[in-house]
Amino acid sequence: MIQQIKRIPGVTSIYRVFRLAPIYHYLLAFLGAAVYGFPSRRMVVIGVTGTKGKTTTCNLIAHILNAADHKTGLATTVNFRIGEEEWVNDTKQTMLGRFALQKLLKRMAAAGCEYAVVETSSEGVLQFRHRFINYHVAVFTNLSPEHIERHGSFEKYRAAKVKLFAQVARKKDGVGVYNLDDPNIDYFLRPPVAAQYGYALRTSPAQAKENALRVLQIKNIRLSAAETEFELGGDRYLMPLLGEFNVLNAAAAICVALSRLIPPEKIKAALETARPAPGRLEFIDKGQDFRVIVDYAHEPASLTALYETVKTIFKPRRVIGLLGSQGGGRDKAKRAEMGRLAANFCDTLILTNEDPYDEPPEKIVEDIERAARAVKNGAEILKIIDRREAIRQALKLAAPGDAVVISGKGGEVWMCVAAGKMIPWNDRRIVEEALEESKQGQVSR
Image (cartoon, rainbow, N blue to C red; front, side, top):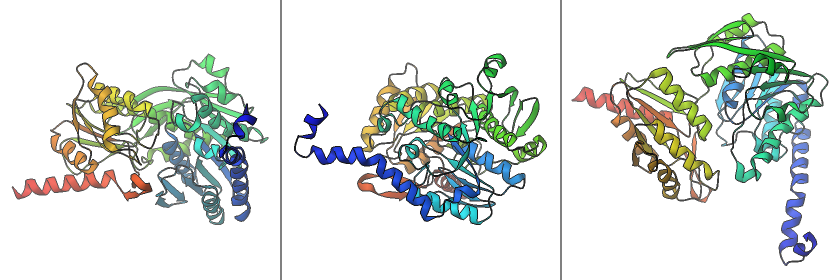
């Protein structure tokens, strides 16, 4: 059959391109590492993969290691760090391309970094960006459907993530860190990583111990509007990051630190001074009498966790949600699900633009709206395509005791629109400007 298809005019060249694509990506990965002298060999590289929590977990790991006097480099969706120097990731890439990533790793090694923490995406694995990086530690946060169009199926998406652990399993001193509560955990435990650290909140201790060599149980979580306390492996931790999902992110980071023999006392001290990654459950306070939260949540599981955290911790009078979705053929199926859950959680829901790429923003919003309006006794729904205006309207609608939840872009600094254009964007800055203008207007009156 393949031979018959290949005889069709014009198909032969396409077939060759797709057949040779893996070789092309592999060679690029090798060339990138070779050009910069295989810099990862001079550091302990920690790769973090999963669907949610990767950026926050990476930042927590780097913060703990730096605080324990181990100079550390960091590469995530939103930020880069070398020691205490930090700058924004403005590339619109979770995992940099092969040459750019190897160049950054070389900068880290040249600066004397002992560790490099790399957010490792399924797209990066698909294009062999993880190859020729000397990973010592692999971290699995969780898994839920995302990027299905890109990978072809959820199973292929999961398999791409597992490849990071297969790579670490080839090391005699490799370390794996696992969220044992995740339904997909068995797949990630299959590669025989030498040292396995598992953390669990809902999985029973007996069941968890069947799955990993060392298991740390999460217990006695105490959530408040100012801080979060929890126990892990018998030690009590306190941090300013909020929400149960951040307890899981912190547990992953603690497991990594313990695997590197960082004393619990130093880990505790570091967590007490941790701060959210840009655009991850970020609170904006300009003296207003309602709460404003900016978060990256852009798929159903993370959006649910965001709304649940806001309602549980702050108990707002009303929730005003601002929601969009990506265009360009990216996970179209999630639009309806996000519309339904947002309509269930929010009292007022403003549907707006996010990253439309070449897809009409109105079409994306209609896909979300159709599902949101089907929710019985759901939210009041408004459509404002202009995201800047939508943010301003959400803030105008807010009354004392309300919570305005702006999701989808978080700390991103670009909006991707038609014809491959990227326009500068910053949800936080727009919120701050609108709140300042509102305050000045009240004073002038």
